[in-house]
Length: 110
Image 1 (cartoon, rainbow, N blue to C red):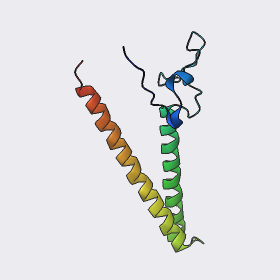
Image 2: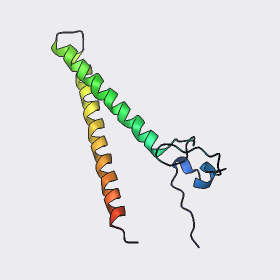
Image 3: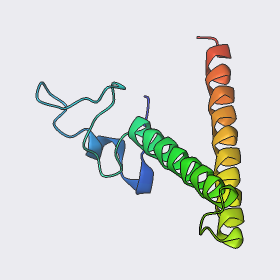
Image 4: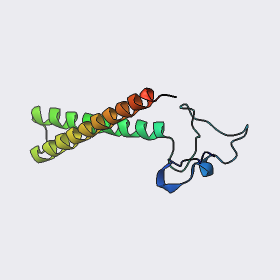
């Protein structure tokens, strides 16, 4: 007997997010159920990368404004650059972990 494993966020069960998985169930672009309480993993990943891109653009604009002699404060510019740098490092680590997990799954023998 195979027991289902719940891997959805915030402790919700997979069965709760798939209720009514008949012909009228909505499916997102990744093939998973849409409209769950936490959204799909692809949506969350897209939001995180959009936020990271915004942080990087904001830091770049602040640095350009400071270099051009604008009204940007040095402390604020350095703080934005550090936040963007930490976010980028986190994004790279998440990407590396996802690739490792994918490679591990591909090595599994069925």
